[in-house]
Length: 424
Image (cartoon, rainbow, N blue to C red; front, side):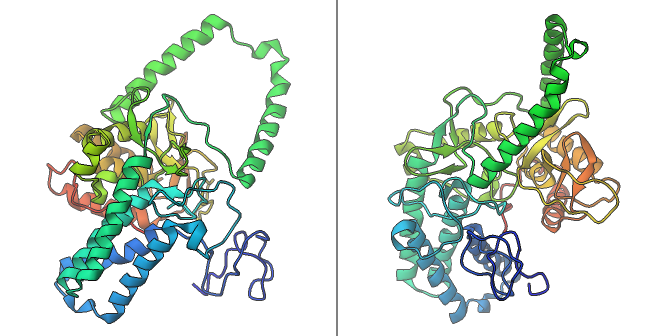
């Protein structure tokens, strides 16, 4: 909003923002623009809002000519970004890795976490687009009686489903992937590694800090045993997928490169079961996969240490899905979470998709015990000290927690698959 104004670190200098610092970014940010990220889930949330509103109120008069024009423009946007490098005029920041315009997937600049993507096609976001297109087709048929608009939406959804099946499914590497860094991330990584080496080199020369190999081996065995026990408490899954087992990628470039990770921000891979997305039997069988098994394998990966955003602390019995995105803000006295933050959104979605009552209840217990006596959901807390957190009250997580509790009023509600868990 205008009171907040442009993000000075993400917008270029202009008349409206003379102290903006992002000199490699364009176009300029206006008084009502915070930054120029293009995220696919944002327009999809508009469709979902209308669908849920009508479902709750039966007030169908909201589907007027203005809404129809919005839906048409949304389809036009998706069709343009299917071939971003050929048709799109959007530009915000330099993009180091080019993507393939001929995949059928929709290009976007930023992840749901607001961070710039490594590769152009975010898989969870494309799944959300498919769900939105199915809704648009239904709205066009039922309320506007426009068969052309409905068919256009259905055709685009079918193209994306096929593209997801052919480009979005990967073989699990069997370990954590070394994800390519964007130029700014690469610079920060070099600085952090240099500082760490300087810090540790002081002790590496001193024998009193050494540990005998036998003792180290025993410590490692004890930690592995405790890790398995902790994961068995928080989840019914204590092992990642097998090597080369099929899972969903997080991002792809359409040329064969991909990012193997998941993030707590929605939409994500963990929340696929709640999103309403389905490949369909015909497409799934054409690539030789079982869609349910594919999700289960992907979920096992997302909740394992092969995922760079899954954080685990053995000493404090803390584990959960987080994000490399950090909003270093809090108003109450105390320290922020600097990195390796377990996000409450990640624990909420894990609880919503839990395969057993025990897993669900353990996630709820962890959510309750990490509020630092505020009884509100934070953005994320430090994986070794829950009193170090970001955001005193995170509205998105509070809303999702409320939905989770309402679902749990039914004691058998382990996996409320009808609940949409993504938002803008």
